[in-house]
Image (cartoon, rainbow, N blue to C red; front, side, top):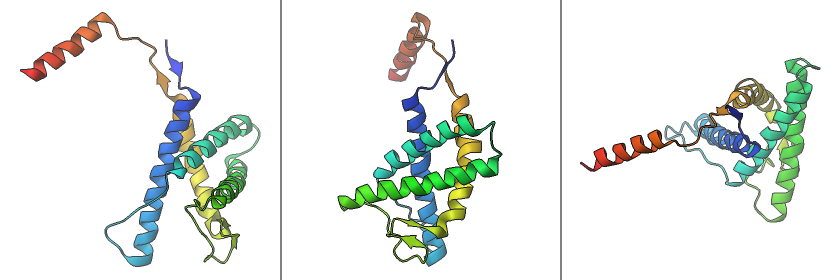
Length: 164
């Protein structure tokens, strides 16, 4: 029997996706600013929680909004959510001197925690999140089969063969 992924499994996939995108974005930004061919990307471990939770909430929004609004309206709503979430998590982390971003140098910043200059990248990211990440993650299934005696035997044969 095929079972849908658990909430935690989906959160994990979303967290890894966000973490990876953050590293790639910062590497690309570094290249544009400095022509650094090493592409050094970076992020914070907080990004796992921030992205995993945010995309899981966007997933819930998608499931609720998909029949009511077109993709552009949904992605505008997601972008607004991203700004609220980024501000809230940044504000909390700032209280512990742990906020990994600072947009103070951007013209459209608010308290250094969010910036209007990222509206289009966040909007485009929300399209990718919905159309590629969320839709495909929701289609993933566990096969539900337990290890059988024959599969365990095959595993033992593999281990024995590797020892030879």
